Length: 80
Image (tube, rainbow, N blue to C red; front, side, top):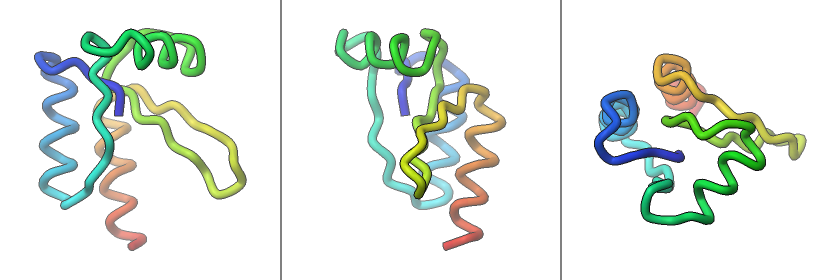
């Protein structure tokens, strides 16, 4: 998940990750220019939080809205 540490929407998603017991890599776009450039180049915008999802068919999906990310994480837990 691409994030900024002080972003309240990112904090909301991180809390959901912790609550659901999910270990997802956190990519701080302020500390790593490569992460920021990758987010813009591949995702299309510099908005955080952003969850990069690799689908089983190899396609990549970029999920931006915190409520959508949280809903996706909850769905992952239900499927598992």
